Length: 471
Length: 44
Image (cartoon, rainbow over all chains, first blue to last red):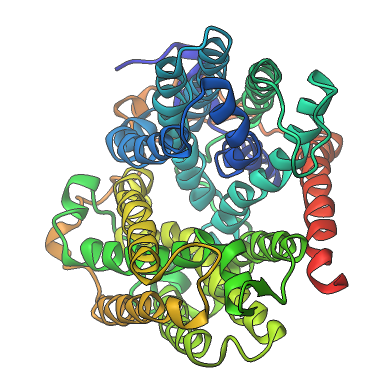
């Protein structure tokens, strides 16, 4: 599928002397917008009342978007790699924005299916394309520090929710004066529709700015003083290239898929239940030592560690290596989970520290994955391979809540649960992390039979068109 | 495949600063609000 020439990869090849530090804000401009997907809870109750529906029916909007994220990242990954980041960011911006606008139409006309189609399907496809759009470009601009580069972008996805939650409350208050953001007040459906229109237009402008400034490095470009031979000396790191089609035929891809799936599932186990979980852990009879406000504060702490972990741990992986980093996520994470299950209820501070570290590992797993793929399969189609790997996220998005909710449902009713009721679910997560740890341990260098012929580096058939405009 | 000579460019520092500011300001706003919410956990 060809793209208009102003979006083509050939049009955005950077000239010598271009400053690569313009690329991280381009990537952040996209990820900060699509990170809104994790802030849907601010208008969930309003939509339940507006459509006179259930939490489950409204929850489908978010679930649909996350499933479409994984599917579209896998399906369009090769297209993204072939056509470059500007085409991908532009497409993501249009779809993400259209998702909000169609969703707003659905709310205004009381048609829930339009919200499913808009935010869930169109927006979800925009999410998937947007998520992978800057990743391979960043890896190519920062071959000396790919973990730092992908950490910066994927940190933005965590940061997007931190921005969208308070701004959404303020906008809904602006559109509906009866809503002040405190517990007990719910914004009108019309305020949510106007919020959707506002977010759709603002996100469109923001993401298009990212598409406008993004550039790809010339094939022969190297950072000053960078010698690729020094990278090759590190364990597991290759300077060869493997296509996306071949990558998914290697055991390394599927072992990493399992490791990511286990890490994400374990993290979702806490994220899914964060606020009620801390109250239940310190419950004495019908009352908890942790107030609802403090529980909301705990969710805030987890958000900060989720975002911080994406940057800090991924950057650390540049120094200690991707495989050891995943051993920490899964091995230390396993120990932390055991401590949470056994002594987590002894003190609030201990519970918070353990949970926050686990969530930082959850975030770190996401941001380290693309750099891990670069190490194993090279830069040739790393965006497409990353897209396929994200199906692990979709699967974990189903498995994590199923495990935690399934166990808790069998133990009692919400509001009456205590720390002991969480133990079976936490120990299932320990088992999952053990499986992930072993899977990561089994990852070895990719067999040379999968390598592309020498000289395969730029993923476009038009790379020989040297009349292309460069900037 | 030979790479043709391409004129060098210079990325204006102001553009880089503007781009970082554009993403940094909303992020700082989000962080500030989240830290404020999180502080309720420790403030009792």
